[in-house]
Length: 475
Image (spheres, one colour):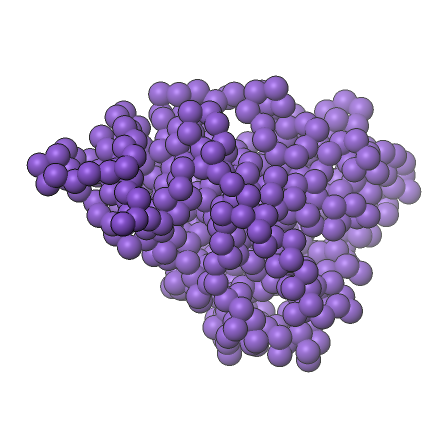
């Protein structure tokens, strides 16, 4: 008989409410939800009992935007699939969706095989892939169909930024969208006007404006808004293809998205913790080279813009203009990595490490009254699962679903920092000194306890590759 675990006396939270029920797990899946206290009268026995009195029992977090071992700007993201998924588990995350990368001139299927090789046998939680298409040609378009049909990869990321590396022009984007329209897949878009940005970058550097803060000045929010709007127009021309705008940072972009959603288009948005909490003035503009820690694209925005980007993004999360919170986890150390950009901000590897802290940071939004507890679960777990074809296997506590569970202690406290809570493979914390009114208590991945009593009890290789279906979140 398979091992049984009973999580009792907790409050199970779903996107639609809170329920005083106990969770019975058998093997890797949830067997039943029982009225609180009923397990005794039903004579239910369990090999392990987790007492969740006073705690929330929520579906494990799903981070649908991570970059483990990503090659970028002459170096690689510092988290491997092993270190990155272990850090994720520490943060109550039980599934990641990473990006297999095809650059211009490379073969899509070969690039996917490379990513499978990096991840296989190394992950302590479940994982899936999106495919980045950096070179759209006949072969790449045919490969999109193949991946949807055979590989369980149903989302393709395109870039309007990074000319010469990942950039696609409007014609290429339209062709990829038409292909997606035929095979049912979702197009993910990095929406910034890279051609215009490159001009601004060169102009800043020519003027000797080389500090990290100029990374933000060279990528104005207007150019994110413009690219977002252009991506939406192209998706409309391609037949209302599902379009998912990644890592949104700017009110202008959100306004374009909201208008499209109001029209009933299949356009969806994600944001990340850094865009909800950080500012150019407090982070990127720190003295010396400190600001390099916070260089990511799109950039951290100014608190003195005519838009209040933070307030608008939180409102977007409340109103479901933004469906998902991810991290865009792409960590680099300061030493030998971020330092590549000393004297030239455009050479700083773009990215921050947050996979461990998303559940914590967004829960703090619940404490602050920005979103509800239910919405926390929805944006960090349920909607990501539905958006990327993993529901109800993932993203909900229900009979038959994988037993991916986070027991969250609202009375605990978390202090983030290199000498506090920090398990990512980085020599600094992107969230140094940040305090959260709540704490990861226990984490289960497919029924296996991977974090308990401030100890990691998981194992490398436990994580399985998840073949995904099509988007289940369409308007």
